[in-house]
Length: 178
Image (cartoon, rainbow, N blue to C red; front, side):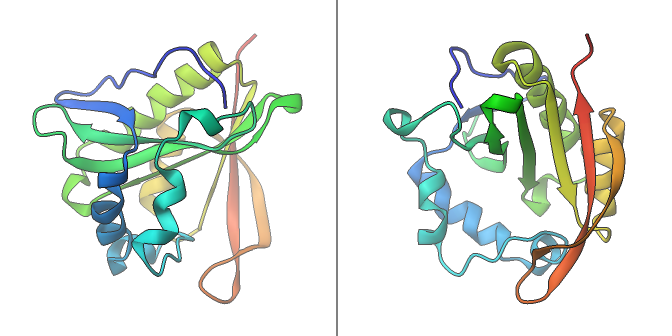
């Protein structure tokens, strides 16, 4: 995904910034906590499996996946990540994904990050359709999407393998207003 300016996170004491190599270990640490991975499709076995998410701007193309770090403004400590994958420039669409460390849960941070990326994706990048998939068991993520005006489109049966078996996912979309 190509862009000329960073999204701005409208949430006290936090920023969106490039995901760096030194974020990989703390990201892996919380992604492998059962409370996190039980409601996601993550299946990372080592920090090395996440290293390709660290920013390398020379490799960006118009269809590159893009992940931002959600960090504490004062300490720069990683609180979560958010970004886009399955970017399809010809259709002006991408899939939004986010995750938070359990230490950052319950404060509205995921909702704020989602809202910031929606605004940025539609207005700055020019995405018409921003979609998100979520396991039916992930009620917190469903609430984040619905608070941000995503509409549930339907159930994608056996859509993605999750640590072995194929699982169902809800498909949500947010369409740019004309």
